[in-house]
Image (cartoon, rainbow, N blue to C red; front, side, top):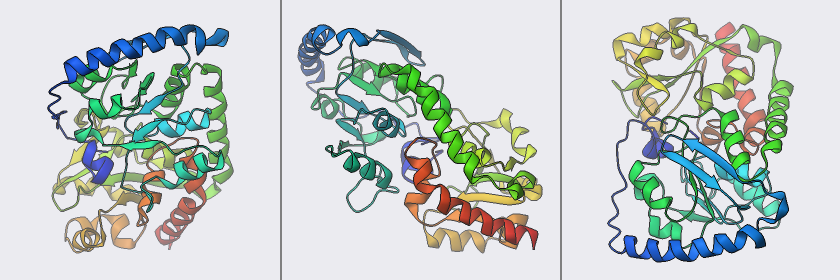
Length: 356
C-alpha cells in the first residue's frame, strides 16, 4: 500500500513489468456499448445523483486528466489504500482489488471487513489484482468512478478502464504516492476535499499518541530481501511503510537518502547488492519482512545478511503476522489504528535489544 516485487503487493508491484494481458476479444464493442450505457447513466446522474452539493473536479495524473462531473456512488478501487480511504469518507466501494497477503479467511483485509460490517453495509466484491486485472470484470460492477492513485496500473489498463468510468491513476510513477496525497486525491475525487485534512489530522494524532521518548534517538532502515540472498533493497523516506515508522518519531538512517539516485522507477526503493549491506551498519533497527519462515531461516544463516549489525544483535522488526505486515505497510484511516499498538510493542522489543 504500497512493494518492489515483494510477495503479494510484492507480486503486483515492484520491478514488475507485467502488462495487462487478458485478451478482451469483445472489449472494444462491449466497452463501447457499456460506455454508452454508463455515459447515459452518468448524464442522468448529473441531475439525479450529483445534486447541488457536488462540485465537478478535474484531476491530472501520470496517465491523463480525469473530469468527474457528478457525485460518485459506485466506486471501484484498484491497488492499495484507496478502498480504506473511501470507506472512511462514507463511500463503501462496490468492488476493490483483492489482496490475499494479509487477508483473513474471508479473503478481506481485517480492518476493511471490520469497518464495513460496523457500518452494516455489504462488503465490496473482490476483483483480480494487477497482472490479472480485467476490464470486463470491472465493467460488471457498473462503476461511475475507478480509483487507483496508489497502484501499478499500466497505460493499456488505463485506456480500457477510462472508457468505462472516470479513472484516477498515480501522480507520476506506479506505486509511488505519499499517504497524505493519496487521501487528498481520493477525497477530491469523491467531492469531499475538505474532509482530507480532517483524516490526515486524525492519523497524525494517532501517531502522536503512540510516540515515545526513546524513539527520537533511534535510527532505522527499512529493507526488503525479495525472498532470498543476493536480492536486497532499501525503501525511500516517501514509501508508505517508511513513513509509518517515521511518523512515530524514529529517524531514518541518513545513508538511505544517499541512495536516492539509485531508486528503481515505480518502486520508491533502491537495490542493494550484498557487498553494500554494510552501509546499514549505523542503523539501530532494521525493519523488514519475510515471505515465510523458511526464507527467514535461510537469510539468517546467510553469512553476509546475518552480519548486518542490527540483524546480528536481534534489533530487527520483522512481523510474522501477514495482516500486521500489510497494515503497517500503508498509512490510511483504517490500517493505522488497527495495527499501531501491536506494532509499537514489536518496536519496543527491538529497541531494548539494540540498547542491551
